Image (cartoon, rainbow, N blue to C red; front, side, top):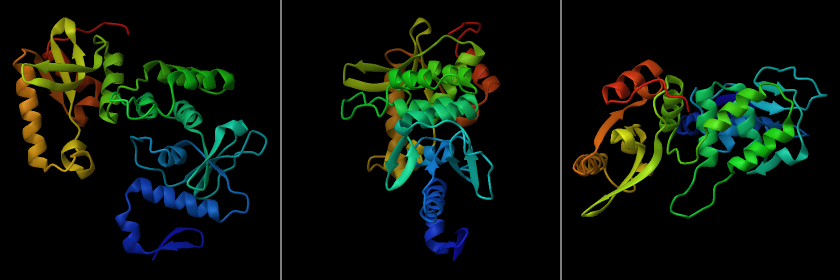
Length: 285
């Protein structure tokens, strides 16, 4: 058995089969169910429940909001945030009291570095370009909630993250790459530009700079390794399909540059990669 909180244990085999996000949610659920008055789960814990990406490892403590007048003293395993909380900011998800998606995005943007804040906001705003579902939250809703909360600590940091957020971003790697593009000052790209050839639709690209005839692709490992993202294909088939897609793009003809996580998250390495593909520097977004 594995002790996950005071007086709570879980079978070690079942625990090890859970991913880090699911482990954090289980700890939060156990802590919440142990209390007569369940807390409002917030910040990184709310991000886990809303399935927002977190760039750092999931925290060892459960985050809660206790309200401005309650005091924010934290105890072992629990981080208490003494900040104002409206009733409209509280929702129930799978039996847990948690901050709403909009409030969670704002709380994360107020406390996380810019890369992590934008990655979370991008996921919350994600647009289904095929029209199968509406976005979970809109940028207008986020800005309205930001205005209603004013003044609050780090509100300018939050606004900066909202200004950079874009629901067309397809992954955390695309999000951090785009933020670093802004920071190093390369031209702003078009996201999810669609391309076709004589055989039909090729696909939507991560980044497109028309003035430089350049396509940028941020290659995460998940689309090759995660079965849920392969749509029933083997990893070898995904690699082959990606190679054929790249060949068709180059034949249009389009220039193409690719990078992985270690480059996208590092401004210096990303600048070296993009400058080598012909992009200039010194452009303000």
